[in-house]
Amino acid sequence: MLIRYNKNEEIPVTSKIYQVMVPKTIRFGVGALHTLGDEAGKLEAKKALIITD
Image (cartoon, rainbow, N blue to C red; front, side):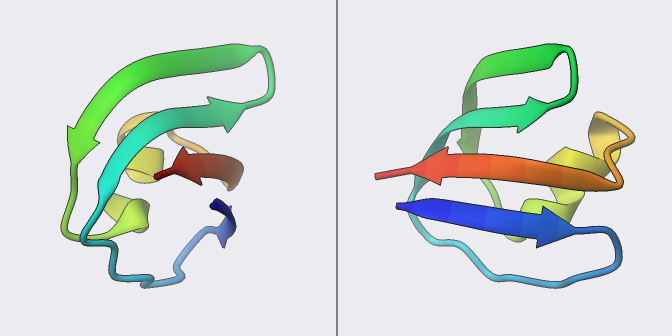
């Protein structure tokens, strides 16, 4: 499943996230999250493409 994230969006996710991709950055094995915004915020992303199972 691909989920597009925009800053300040709250999208609950219960599955494991495999990748959070932001411009010039790919981070693997992120782990389970309460919201996509938490992890994208750690990467200081304004927009991100999140790949989950």
